[in-house]
Length: 299
Image (cartoon, rainbow, N blue to C red):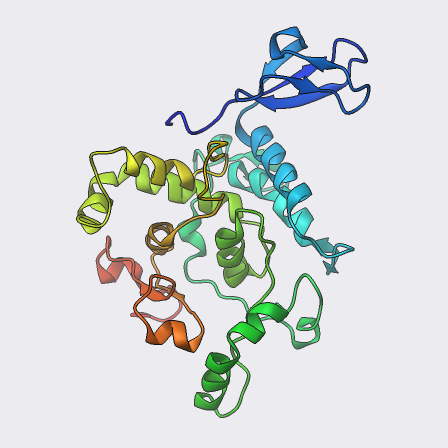
């Protein structure tokens, strides 16, 4: 992975022994427990974070700075926060025949991680009683922003409300949270979607470069950055002004991971203008017969 993926570490404060987490850009670490300041080299029991542990750390860090509802909303016993914490585990684990959790690599599939294309023919319909649940149901800001478009969709479907914008947390993973919710109703597969997207772009880089030839500079390391950004553990450089989100190329990649179209909507004035914030992203890296749904041939 390129150097924009910062290495993260844990170490114990030399004064109070509290475990601290930091990355390679940290020049001075202040302990929140005793306020002692240390150089990274002065900490005790240094350990490099990686894999799922780093995913948990990055997710917790983003959650602490993200806007959240006052209390987690639980639907059928699970909150979105708990679903997101389960995400990295579901990427690398499944269940054996006895119903016990096991690493995928020891199960019959021998897979490195969960194949998200298995979710490609799924879709979620929210229970009407949950539409007004804060933090789970309709996102009020998006509903107002898309009001004209949603009205036209309702009119085209005999005034039946068949499309609503649902809430997801804006924590840097909102695209894959939204895709996971569209597929299964929960954010459970956000991590698997990003891992699949990252590996797909790595393994098919030449094909992505061909699709976006003339739009992305292939000589200046821009593709390295775009592919690195797909990884669930990606952290932008501290001096970056681009934020922590994904771009339209990643939507195209997810369409190919899932082997199904993804439609990105905008408000009506946005749809009428020439912008990149709306479009239909087709899985064009695969032939049509490989993108047919399991339940309805040709869909």
